[in-house]
Amino acid sequence: MKIATGLHGVDESMRARVRAVLAQTEAEHNIRIVFACESGSRGWGFASPDSDYDVRFLYVHKPEWYLRVESPRDVIEKPIDAELDVCGWEWRKALGLLKRANPTLIDWLDSPVIYRQDEEVMAGLRAIGDRFFSPERARWHYRSMAHKNFQHYLQNDEVRLKKYFYVLRPLLAVRWIEAGKGAPPMRFDRLLEGTVQAGPLLEDIAELLSAKQRAGEAQFGPRRPVLHAFIEHELARAEARLAPPPHKQDDSLLDALLFKTVMGKVA
Image (cartoon, rainbow, N blue to C red; front, side):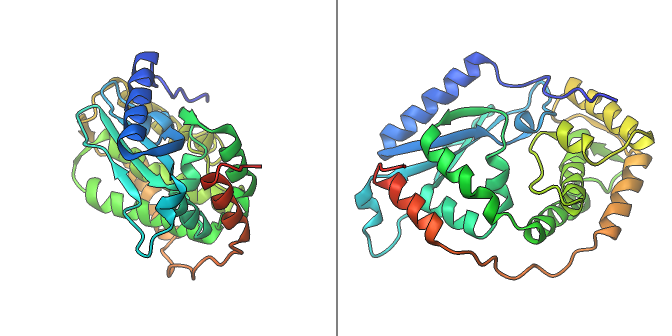
């Protein structure tokens, strides 16, 4: 069964608006944005017609910013409106998160919707990114996310349709990781194809996905027994373990990339 996703992606007018916001952010903060992507449901491929836009970016300061005793704030968050949510991480912060095998950053790098990209800088990051992926940390991250969302959003007889995907996606990511396939893809259709075989579960997910892509973000519907049974089984099967120990990696590759990017000497 072919699952249809991406029906409500990002049109050119919104891309232009996002690029304008990024350019304004660079001017306001005297920074250089090296990467910007869509991180939410439009990147995952199951947006509703009225889904907002979740823009995430990585940025670099001038060299003198890094020569301070106390590190300044390393996150930029733009005021959120009804349509656009924009947030960025400073480059040193991002590389530190990569060192600790942060699954969110690794997820951004696989986004199918790229608004801005310094090809040289990001090629340098992607060349070493796989070395810092930790199956243990990623599995713990996604399982914990699924459990939290299930407890918060899917306990009533009527539930918001979109919240099923906030549980299904991380649970399928756990399956992907346990199958030894590496970092899970951001796109839901690829994740689904690699983890769920044809049958009632796939049919129910496809039906729900179609309904979600036609409905608004706030659309409610009755609990779906097939999906609930799958979720409860997967959460029990993948019972949370203790958080894995710190992910230890050699800093030298990240230090070199930090220096080259900040100093404008990317090889």
